[in-house]
Amino acid sequence: MNNHTQSNIKTGDKTEAPRKRIAIVTGASGGIGRVFVRELAKETIDEIWAVGRNSQRLSALQNEAGVKVVPVCKDLTDHAALLSFSDLLKEQAPRVLWLVNNAGIARMAPSREFSAPEITQATDLNCKAPAVLISLCIPYMEKGSYILNVSSAAAFQPVPYLNLYAAAKAFARSYSRALHAELRPCGITVTAVCPGWVDTDLLSRERNGRIVRFPGLVIPERVVAKALKDAKRGRDMSVCSLYVKCQHLTAKLLPQRLTMRLWLHGIRSYL
Image (cartoon, rainbow, N blue to C red; front, top):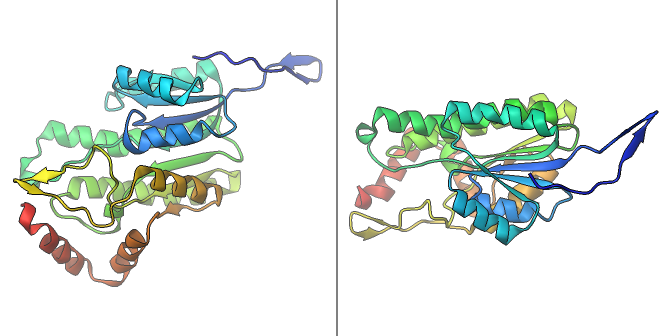
């Protein structure tokens, strides 16, 4: 961990160092996570624990974003590695000002093509890891702390051929909004970040020999800027574009069977 020189605080007859103010960002080595790290580096915090599996990419991120970045190389689908965050938090005893659960995995395919290990990995990363990290971090949070869980516009309705991912993001959205209601009296804000298509390496640019078109595609910087602004406003959900806001409204007004048919019609040429 990086060492930071801080002035001591006197409490009664005791002198103790102030607790380190940190942000934790999972899936930090690329895409939305990388942008979150860059933007949070501008906040009044001491360290950003950038969590990812690729140590080289984390080191590159540290060189890019500055000395606040502390690479934490962990595979969050490994149960022991996930729980080891408890030891790390106990050792450092920081104030967790920001927790950004961004790590995720997605694949568009018929459900019959998913193996049992792939399903387990996806649900562990998309659902279990954020919930466990939140549970571990809450004791180190206080009034003015923020939790951002990266969900998706896919959480608004069932999405055939993307259903494992969409269901996991529906979990993230529902979990976040309920947790926001629970923690609001403590002054902790929980925000479900629900972007549509985001221009990152996660997107498959070609399928079955056809160039894939992504309606409403936005850059990750736009998603992150809106998410941070909405969190600071105390909102339990962040939607960053008019296109996705229309999707959200449509999902409320139309029967889900119809929204699924419209989705299937839109992707028919890629199946």
